[in-house]
Length: 85
Image (cartoon, rainbow, N blue to C red; front, side):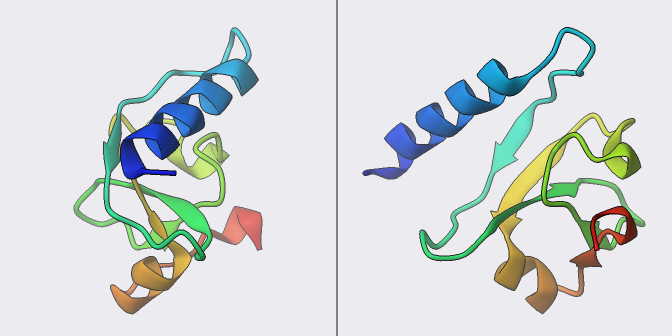
């Protein structure tokens, strides 16, 4: 499956799983390996954690989320969010 189709499928699943109270957030896509776990990073100056879901309460106020992989996030100094350990 090519990257654009993968992004469309992911967005369709994300939108379908959203409840009426969940905030829809713009996602900034980053290339990721197909065999790694996709994670979410809030784009802020001081943020050094990654999240397994874009609906984690730690990124509730985030306006821009970047999609990455757990391997890439950790290699760039990010750690798994404490709420998701």
